[in-house]
Length: 189
Image (cartoon, rainbow, N blue to C red; front, side, top):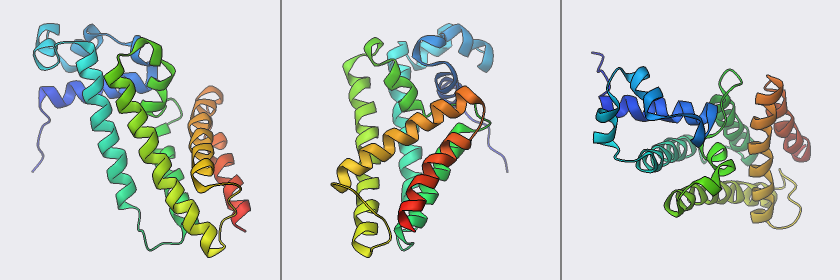
């Protein structure tokens, strides 16, 4: 049996998509009201301010990404887990026009309040921490070459992946994301 999403869920889903496409400043409650088919006052009922909506969107998106990370089998070799992680970025990119929500919002950070900045920083740190653990395990097993600390390598890899989705969007190709994946795969060989 198919369940319909609530108005609140539809608002959040559309807001996430619009922010991944246009950023924080690229959508309004009017855009959402047209997409969901409700008055803007209904959106204000659920989310009194745009910042309330954005913070909830970041929490929802972060939760979904973290669930994706937990779904990656920890018994796989480190290089297989990194490949699965890169595929998560590929899913986010979709048909080549979306960017990671938190990556997109990081570009708008000067327009955002501190609580949203902190939520985005937490997202980045959680991803970097997961990557550091995988990179450290791969280095210990001799399957990955990690120059410097695993933490530094994780920050570099995460930044490269975030940048690759921006470039993939710019050039309308996933090859930029694939290039990042190929870099660490060569190091693992």
